[in-house]
Length: 151
Image 1 (tube, one colour):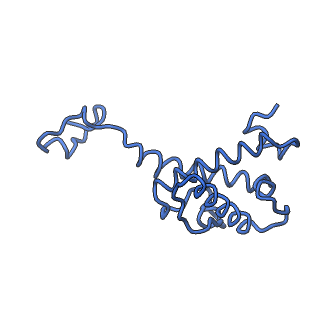
Image 2: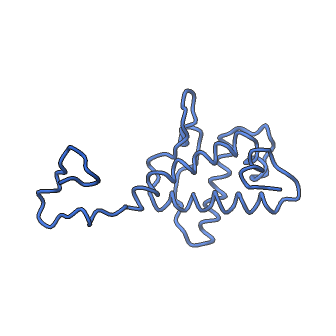
C-alpha cells in the first residue's frame, strides 16, 4: 500500500491498524503556513524592498538601509496585528531573516517564525501593501504597479 498514487515504495503507514489512504488529507498548516506562505512573504518583501516601494510605504528616504526599512516594516506589522488582536511576536525582520544575504538566491522567511505568525505577517504584507499602493495618487515603481494591476 502506498500513501499517494502508485509509487513503488510501500508506505510505512500501511501496517498501522486503522490506516487508510482516504484519511490522508492536506495539512494546511504545514503545506501553506510553514511551507509556501513564508516563501511568498519573503519574496514580496524582497521585491518591494528592491524597487524602493517598501521605503515609500514606510515613509523612509530611498537611501535608508534595507535592515532599517525591514525594522520599520516589522514595527508597522506588529502595530497592525495588535490593533486586530492578532499575535505577531517576532524578532525584527532583517536581510538575513529573509535569506537575502550575500550569495542567497531564494528569499524565504526565517523558520523560527511560527505558522500562525507567518499567516499574520502574510495578511499584513498583502493587505497593507495593496491598500497603500492602490490608494496613492502617484504611481510607485514599475514592478509594484504591475503586481497590483494598476491601470
